[in-house]
Image (cartoon, rainbow, N blue to C red; front, side):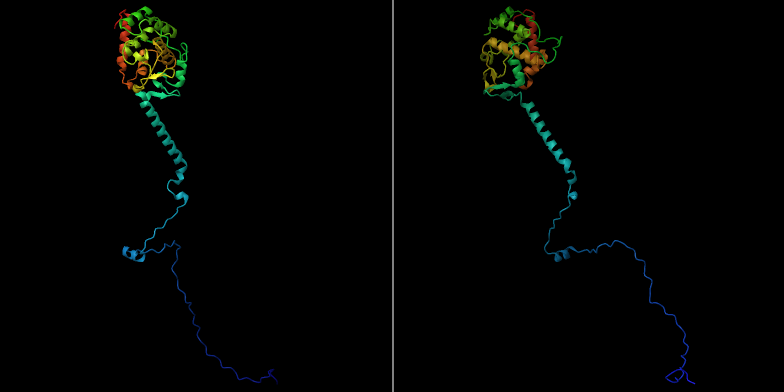
Length: 306
């Protein structure tokens, strides 16, 4: 009976001996937990000698910092205006202090003008003020209302002495202006100033034209140089040369009424003299005021010679 194989019969296979199955362990080990940390760059310390050996030639490296890292860069927008403002203030203060120190000291008080003469700040105040009082033909309107009761020794008012009394006073001193009492009186009436004050200034400044520069300038009050009159004695600060004694009276009345009173509001001799004869010109201001008062009181008492 056939078995269905073309190879014929095969010998039977031997059975393999039974073996015991041994479990295989994997070659693994547990690693320690790794923490993510910033790694610092490796650093090492190099001794000074070793450093010099490694770098025999020292090099300088220039590092350009970003704009916002530059010192004070972020404050630049206000530092520059602050610096400019400070410098400007210092310059302005320097100019102001210098002007205050020198405007009334000798020749320094004289300002040149286009005709080659000089113009006194002390007398005129400014070119505008000078034009108002010098070019006037009579008393000008005051900038502020004049006080009704200005107090004692106010220059404003009606005459308290007569023209004849003025002539007698001038004659008693042998004044070269003797005989001009009527003109001094009339000009006082015109400008609203008591002529006793004009006489007192004339007495104190030059003893009625008998001493000092007034003998040449013919000026009642020894006025400094003004633009409308020749300027002489420039070596001692400069004084205005008047046309005659009456012209000198007129210039003084204009100055007193239209500058000191109308523009500066100075009415009494206590306020006028510190400006008219300042201590910066080496004047005894208190002595000047007391002398004027004494002379006026003497004349009001009818005495010719104080």
